[in-house]
Length: 352
Image (cartoon, rainbow, N blue to C red; front, side, top):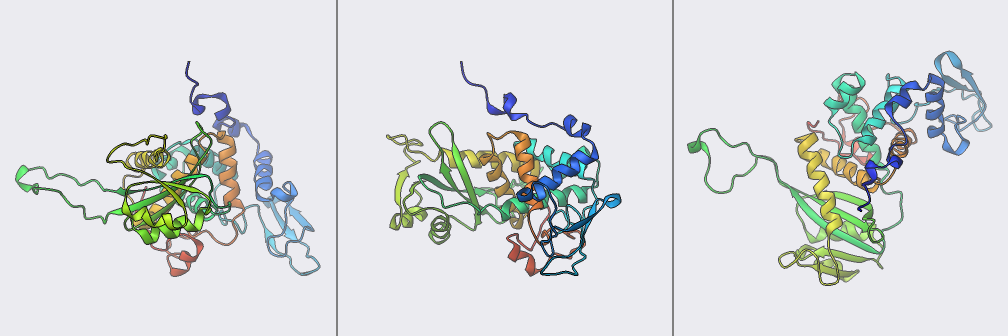
């Protein structure tokens, strides 16, 4: 008898919306504090001077710093979301927690319009909340050591759908070209133990499968002792300079005689295409890094309980300093070159 999928097991359901709905405001507030200040078990620290001598303003759930040795006149007033990527949010904390759990439960993501209806907010609110999460996931993806062991590398092209003309005489002969520029997504996946799939995934948006970009991204993230597995595309040939490389010739077979394959890379592309076609529908190139990395995160967390995923997502947003690149997005206040330095593209297009 086959073992059931993890998402069908009881372990996958460690938190639910009915559970959060039963929490009182104090429990939700305490949860946010513990995620914001994990090193002090939820005891607040002044984000300005790092002092711990605070006055609690209970009526507003805020704190005012009494100062410290470095800055005795600090007097900084802050809340649990101040100075984070949830700064200045007007959403109740329980609504934010429910929204994050909904996103954690969605194996292939959901659209902003669907999230909007679930939590009862405007589309703009759901859109920016989701993109703040995506940008936080992208910003924090490098805080791990270089990949090692077996690493699969592959690229796939995003081919936009082209609507066919109604009348046959209006349909051009031959291959139809899209008005959207073709874009390649490069995936680098560290294979896990046998039968466990990949353990870590990194994605990059590049023009084409070219040797320069591939070598740069692989050498920046993979240990030189790792074994690279790729297909026969010539762009991966330069990797043999610094890595042991195994080639799977897809024109002959998808699995080599020793079991070598790029199945984990293909697994990522399968999930990405399903999310893109089923939820997003379209996106400009400037957004693709965010969407591809979101799928990479979901793939890496696929065997993690949903409550742990939700708290991990929220922790990344609450422990990110400085402003999110999506703060003030609709007023265009953050559409400037400075945003690019945050790790998120500055030019934004339309997306779900």
